[in-house]
Image (cartoon, rainbow, N blue to C red):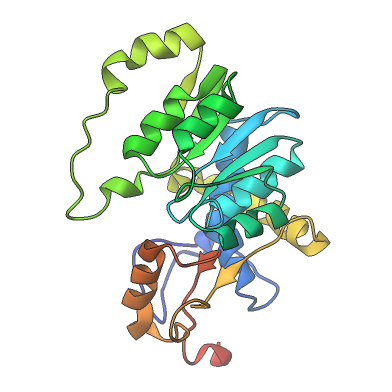
Length: 255
């Protein structure tokens, strides 16, 4: 597993190569998105039975890494809250065990958390940043942990600067709640890739873990060939995907 380019072929060091039993697209989801969720929740959590966990995701908790964070939290015996953008995704979240899907197009995330989770959230898996980060931080329970795996709201070239009202009072807020914020970047855990993937593949093989892959199921046509990469990226930002997006190489059967 390596980072850095879209290509038909790559030459990488053998230590970064991970063995796969076959060419199942589901392994693409396990190798990046699921590993991010598994390692972030174990290294920065850790999760305990009965805790309340909130999962936000750039394309909702039904997206790439969010779907795995939801399932892993449920396997740990937690009560899971997940954000989504439509009723179809809310139904998907329910199907993988999410206790409280929040359709942020219909419900106000801040209001739901304040009303239904008055004692706060124990662990928050956050990847959006901006106002969502502020909302999540304010929803932390005593001893709560906010795990930041991304900040996609600031990635766009035309993203507007966000003047966070949280930052000026951050030190005192952390102190008064004995809470913490953890940053997680998958590339810093290369030494744990192999063991994490083996655990995830075992869970997938036993049926404990579902993998939702999207090759353009809600797009005009499937994503095939490198020329469709830009369409897949636009598709992701539109929020239409259900699961991990992948592009199929046109001659993949030859590999």
